[in-house]
Length: 221
Image 1 (cartoon, rainbow, N blue to C red):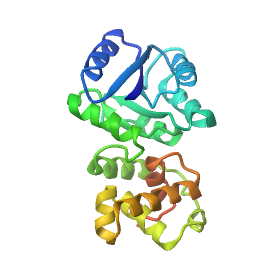
Image 2: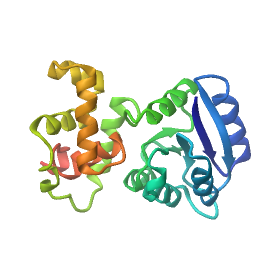
Image 3: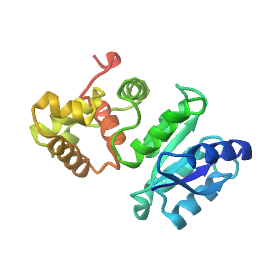
């Protein structure tokens, strides 16, 4: 079972999400909270697999709550999935920089929300590859200063290649097919790249690919 904490300041939204998630998909909602401070405290107490985090909340907003969860080494296994009303929202990009593993729209179809939680819990990718690529390209276009490319020197040529393909929006299955390797091998290269670059998950790996210039959207040409 995927253990989830719901963080949203609207009680009706939390109730609706709980009813939806408890209905299937192997998800167990272990707690509900109404502000970011409670989300951080509850994540530390319960160590859920995923915190479904709204951005605009009282006491402490979801951005700061995400930052605190991501910065706590005891909570490395806790993934934050941001809830947002708009596809392109400045808070989404800030949340990803703070350590969120992905985002989901509040008006998404129920199956999409469940799938997003499953994907983030598995540490595979933010969401569908097409959404990942569009979102991260927009994120990269807002970056003020690129990270130095020297940050990637720790990677082997194959790890850099796999990182590039992930940034292009390919799934692990597609990366394996493109490189004529097994799925397990593709996952191993992704995992080793994340370890060497000290990033929490695949989302952060993709963002780093853009920030270092490994892949360049139009603004960086």
